[in-house]
Length: 375
Figure 1: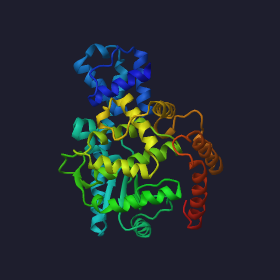
Figure 2: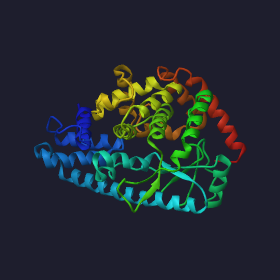
Figure 3: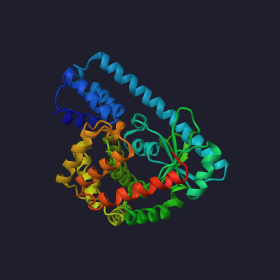
Figure 4: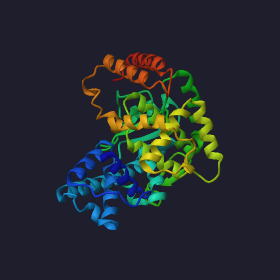
């Protein structure tokens, strides 16, 4: 029942519902805050609280004052954090441009224009930020060399290196935007990224969109639509995924350009990556949680798979950090490998062969990383 109220609260925030259909008790409000915290949607949920207070004040009469003030303080902090990160995005690209390097801010902060176009800049600034992801053109060796020149590090991963330019903001410098741990499918994905690279390195916008004082280069819609789906898919198989990433994808689909060309390109790319069934499950989640109309969906929603996906999302929370089935902090690399393999086996419906490919990929990359002396 609490999950249903929570979904309605988020819908009120994003404008796909007018009310929560009941008056939550003080205990309900405590649980709603915890759900928002687990799903990294505290700021968005607070926008729902403010909308109810304005349009249906009876619904928030039992919201404890202390909790409301805590919620307000967190929402203000999120807004301030977004402002800082947006400025860091612009500063980062200025640094890279000065070195003659092309780059594109993607994921995280690059989603703010999608929010702003539909729901306004104020809601966009309440999206809970993480780190800054920047795709740098030039290939792996060039990017790693650049990172070592700017801020030497041993933190090099499968897709990126940590670029420690700012004291209070984490930056991931990507030499490739993402991956799928299946050698054959990943090759198709990398070819898609290569075809999109030129357009992604030239698309300038504000974050949020009308912010003329914070202009950055970010990817085009087709790239985002494919990449963010693969990103959700990747995290779902690795550790877990939360509703924040799903809401990002909901807003991305609500920003789909007019016409069918982009949707057709999206469906073709996702089909070639063997992710259409997962996409159908995600569509059901977007409808069930956020009220996304089917007209906006490139795939037909699959209720059976979607219900399973939503159960996993609610159990694990943001990036699976609240999943009681796993104690991620205490796992060594071998234990982590077996855990992820078991998880992949439980998700066979979406990727029948990942239980086989993922361990091979991880072992190969672990050895390669150690040979290069990376952490």
